[in-house]
Length: 163
Image 1 (cartoon, helix red, strand yellow):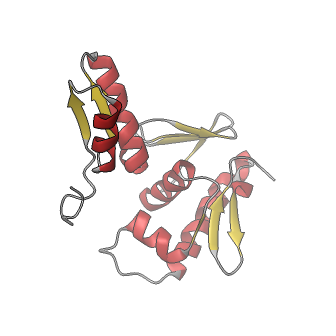
Image 2: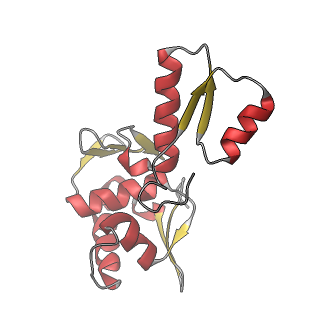
């Protein structure tokens, strides 16, 4: 089910009348991201679709993310830190959004380039350092610059809370 490179990242939700545990396990083991049995409400289906999208591609979600008083609204392209408006350029906005949707994990420069810039862009890994520095500078007035850690020899991490 997940072997074709062109379709392997497309989320799959099975909607079925089969309610036995073995059917559910078989569907999930075959590669489905979720399994919903009849009857189901449209609200439940919509909630499950949003949850699958959040898990598979957080950067594609329009859901507001808030960590330690830092609030990022992707739909409105708005960031506030403790109520203060924060302005970031598009790349820094995507970088911060990625960090906030993937906290407490260390990412190398190469991983950040792939995730934020995309694997079709060829720029130097040190470009990440420049953008990290810019994000920290912009977050400093609200006191959130300390949420981005430099992990020596490994990369960067966004923490859920200030040190």
